[in-house]
Image 1 (tube, helix red, strand yellow):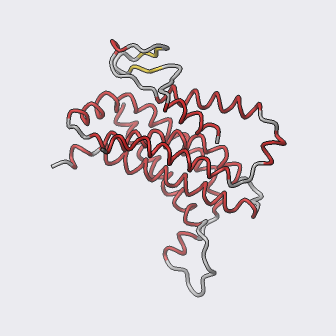
Image 2 (cartoon, each protein chain N blue to C red; image 1 turned 60 degrees about the vertical axis):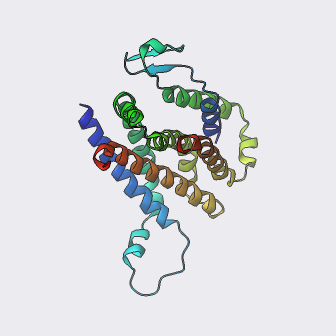
Image 3 (cartoon, chains in turn brown, yellow; image 1 turned 90 degrees about the vertical axis):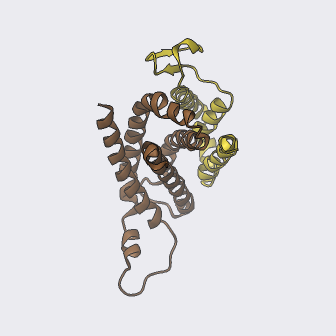
Length: 155
Length: 92
């Protein structure tokens, strides 16, 4: 059961990562493109606002999945990391859990700023909120995957 | 904004209204070392959610609307930086 939950948690995280990365890059200020769009240009040229609801839902569901997996992590993985004296690995996970909590608290504000109609006077706040959330998602994704596979990564 | 501030305060002061003991699969309101390692994170999130919801309900709407949009991202960014500074302890 825990393996199924871990895989579902990972798949949801990938979906969230894709959505937030599209949105985060789409709000980067840029000059108007001339000629055909590059790969990055096409990646960025999405309807940013359309992602907001999906990101909120995916963030909450993925965080709940992580919260359900946490007891197993605390008993098995963290104990192993302590035995291996990998303090920094424990540290990056501690930061992950704090960032996810801060991200959960950020969601109502993020959603409010992305609610249509999008006011131009809120564009800067909307952009930085999106980037903060993107940083949280990327950190959590990378740390989760590295720690999940850490025994295989160690020499 | 308030959620992050309350969460950081609860975490810094090591205050959780309850703790989960995964070995014993039980919640406790008090520190119960005989039940193995504890998870405080659920308690921190819960106290931040409840306290920030109460505070948000108490703040008059007119006052909230006077806040500049920039505070919406500056405060969480500040909380993240403070948290990272505190968590340096794992890397020294």
